[in-house]
Length: 192
Image (cartoon, rainbow, N blue to C red; front, side, top):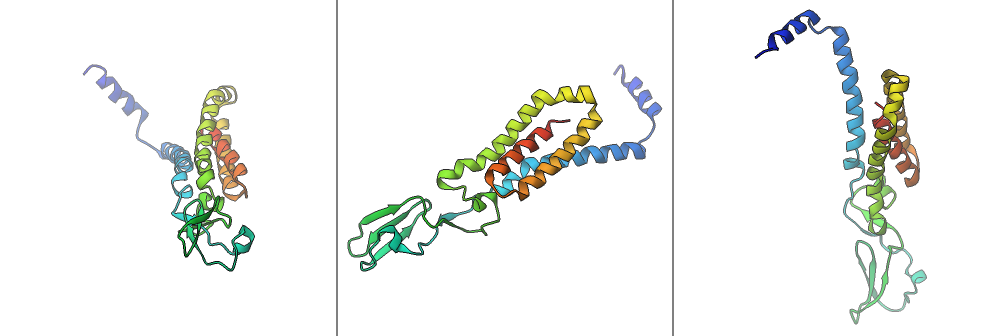
């Protein structure tokens, strides 16, 4: 195979791997692993466990007379109130007036924390979509910054922004702030 000998000669001239090459590989793998974790975390924090409407605490505020016997059938997104002696549904309470009950603790995932089920279920997928939109925006505009200011500056800046937005996404108290941080995470992925 022609050219093969030339490549061997080049490798011999470069010498064996040293400490510098090992440090560079570790640093590059560190950045790749942090990006991969941000992309894959949605599998764990966006998990939607089994759920149903929470039990009604006070039925008098829902115009259900207290002198008649009723049965409450708790569904995933509504409650059917039926009269016991006729088995007819008198009322369907939708959305769930008392919130939801989950198989996990309320703060285990962002889906359970912000009740992103039933009518709000599509909002859970919005966070991952906005991260990918952030990557698209970053890929469109940020390579020019790398050419202008240098790759090392942009790489370090992207890691700082990725770290800060990841911490911000985990600590901010509302879903709106969370998806903004996910967008910034996506933007930082493309700053290399």
